[in-house]
Length: 170
DNA sequence: TTAGTGATATCC
DNA sequence: GATATCACTAAA
Image (cartoon, rainbow, N blue to C red; front, top):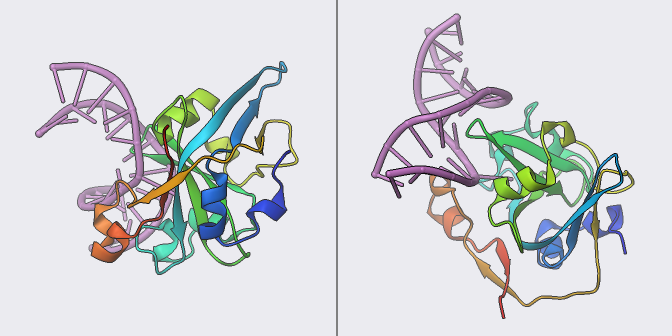
């Protein structure tokens, strides 16, 4: 089953634990497909979240975060790494879920590199196109939570909040 | 632990 | 126009 707007049109904190275990499918023009199961995600939610890019308000860069659910937010980090988020929740409400790693490729930039996702995907939809989609094959991993990574600048509260969702290994 | 890398935001 | 910052990775 392919996930559409309905799946993402809920609060990021409700979507995130369900997104873990789903499969990203990347389709190329020659018909080949790459598949990778999502093993870890992080929630960035609201202007009050100091770690969220939208915490500094609405700008050209963060505009997509305020957009409709099911959009992809891709941005370049440290000049060489593309990071991929999926937008969730209501329009005008900045929230997104960072795809942090897959079962095979650990690390958000490794995943986008493998799936060949770059800035051209920014502000496009994760459903209803022939390049990228997310599938549900019914697999439901056990989830544990942990603080988010790489946001030491966000202050003690936001640094420690457990908005990282990880598929438990067995 | 540190270098590499460039878009973005924020300050002149 | 200039500068500081950054949701990372690979190499050492």
